[in-house]
Image (cartoon, rainbow, N blue to C red; front, side, top):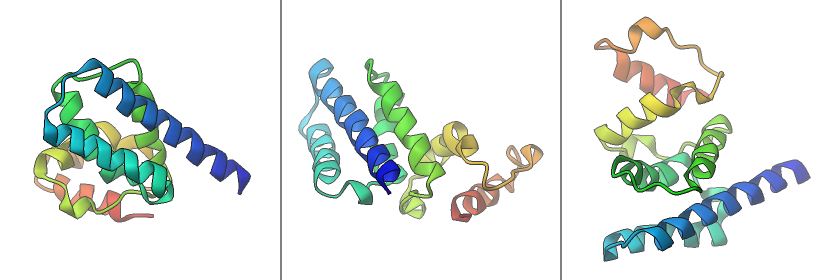
Length: 136
């Protein structure tokens, strides 16, 4: 259990460093400040409840707007870790854009499900995506 606890503390540190670096480098409006504060509060109060969905819905729009810092790779590692450990969160609530982003960047993070690459660019790709995130 100490290894799991250690890893959790490591990802909390990586995400807190990332959130801090975003605040320091970019001027954020009130909505963005609130979103970062909410994730930060959750990391401090209930780190075991933080999911890939929670992090991704903040990470993806920032990345899209090229709001990256030297700590962004650490947050990316945390997303991979959360997916690999099955802490996906309510992916059914994700927007189409967020679904597509997860599919493009994180689908290969886990080897728990095999995916036929030829299916990914067809009409069945959404079903493949749903099955991938439901596996585990």
